[in-house]
Length: 131
Length: 170
Image (cartoon, rainbow over all chains, first blue to last red; front, side, top):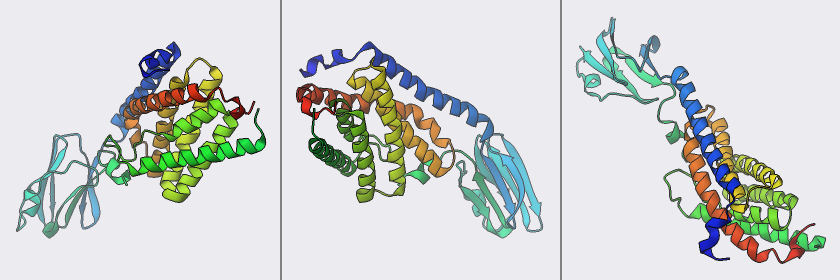
């Protein structure tokens, strides 16, 4: 038996099996994509003084004003990213920070005791599994 | 027809061979950027045992290889991933062999894909959600490629050794 006739050793059922396997993998990915599109959208949690004051949807563009006795912040959600648009704190470090979009990332404004974190099923799960 | 001693020594030798393949693959970095992705050369040994010796002996070799490899080189997660991959792929290959329409490369192809699915399943149970399911298409493609590689190698070896019928348990 030589190497060049090896492709002829495959039967018709093998090609069918390969196609079925490919379709099975595609189907699982497709069904998961359909399912996860509805249920597991990422949420933006806004905390003031360790208390959750608001839960926002990451996929919708939205502006949210946080005003309390510590000061005023404007949280902006734009095309899947969360920024702090405006703040009247001293250093404005929260405004200078780049937008967050992935699960587990956070922005905080320490003078105003504001903490914003994204939770949900977005990118980033692979890094936690890799070892 | 083989004696019991012949059978035991062949099983022992093939188990050692499967473990060595598994260990060598563990040392060589994978070609694609997925952690832990390997060709799966130890599947050659299991598939060869399935055809040349018998299905029960192939199962013994495979399960011994999974346990001993995890004991020597692995951790708990890698043990469960390889156990679930092995069980799923072995029973799928057994089914394909009993069905009898596929050649050795085809059976190996199905086994490769189901080994990947089993590993994905174990990893999904470990992290506690189904977010790894979106990788199943990539993993089925990868399983088809690696399964064909090991299947052709197995076919070439089987054509050479099938005349030694003392290996067979029947």
